[in-house]
Length: 231
Image (cartoon, rainbow, N blue to C red; front, side):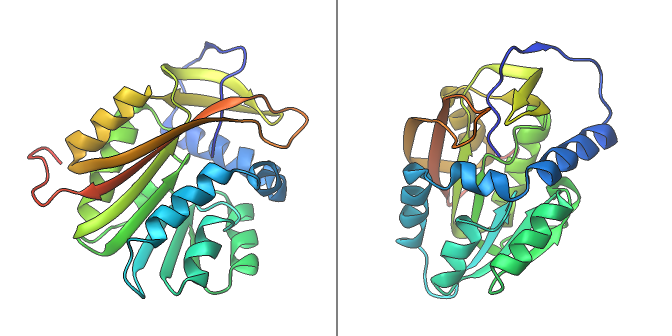
């Protein structure tokens, strides 16, 4: 769920529940327009091909912030993998359920979803943590690493900017954005117990009249045999 800050301002204090409601409302409003805006991202599709080249048949994959189900869940399910998508937006979950019937989707906040240790062969996190603060993003990544099998893979994608709690406009919708720099996100991944195998950075302009060019960063990771003590 990319959201590059535009004219950021210092934000007021927002409770966790208010933030969840705001995040859901933004993507409820965007609906299918979000999919159309990002459908031409070749970097995203290359990232999926990287992951597909490493998964064994019938792998179990968690898609965090699954949106409309395209392209991530659709691509993985079409390759024969068992995909569970989690998204906070009821509209997005409804769209994904109809568009990608071979995957399963659940409307929930990933912070509230019980995740058994070692239950997924791969986890996809494509731009879905940007409306959490840095502490929450770090904690979620740690939980997701624990949910990976010992040889599991994770793809982390973000808008690599040094911003925290700024109000912005994304495709005409008000959002509050927090992100890490490329170096900062790599450090979060490594400290959580991941080995960063590769990364790709690019500039992308969503196909939307209110969109602006935004930097995208994709980290391709594998769980280390021994995870960090604090993970």
